[in-house]
Amino acid sequence: MVIRHSTEEDLPRMMEIYASARNFMAENGNPNQWGPTNWPPQDLIRADIADGNSYVCLCGDRVAGAFFFRQGRDIEPTYRTIQGGRWLDDSPYGVVHRLAGDGSVKGIGSACLEWAFGQCGHLRIDTHGDNRVMQNLLKKSGFVYCGIIHVEEDDDPRLAYEKM
Image (cartoon, rainbow, N blue to C red; front, side, top):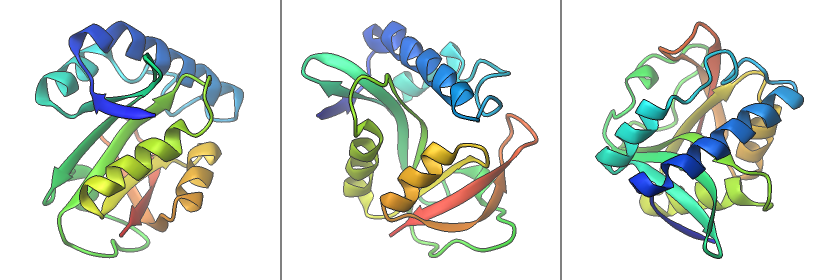
């Protein structure tokens, strides 16, 4: 698998992947994380591409996965307040959001998280309480549960994880 910055030409394929991921989530007990709002919106993905924070995972020459990655100090405003726990470390970190695969290839999620961790050696990520698939992936990938955060998109709390 190869990971590269996404381009505007990748946008239609990325939106197909996100639609597939919404269906997968709904079929696996997580209809509320992305489903009700048709998340993520195309305008957000377009902005991620323009800002250089959007990536795709290629299997051969086909885009099979997509995600957001950014790194720095205090880069995720919703991570400033964590309830029922604490972050492991205050050093600069990378954050992964909007991680999705099209379901055609096993290991896309692991490959994307491994690549992101290789970029900075310190990652934070969050997921919906109903997203058991992502929770299992994070635990398998060496992430530690740290507490609850809240996002701006909805009122559902998110489980926060960190890997160092």
